[in-house]
Length: 92
Image (cartoon, rainbow, N blue to C red; front, side):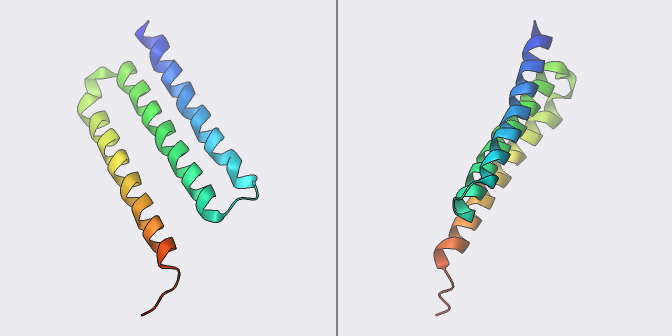
């Protein structure tokens, strides 16, 4: 049963990866595209790591470290992108 949940999490993660790539083809702004790609990629990657955690629980320290690193990295990257886009070239 745990194997089924592990594979389900991995499948959901891959689905999020493709779902986040789809808006890149639209007519929205670059920042909207980056935001949707970043959120979907983060959720997909986290789901895959949780699936791996269910499949190979003996590696839990590394997988939990990967989850924490992924969450912190993508959050900080989002703030940096938002700050860079809000400055808009104001060179005071």
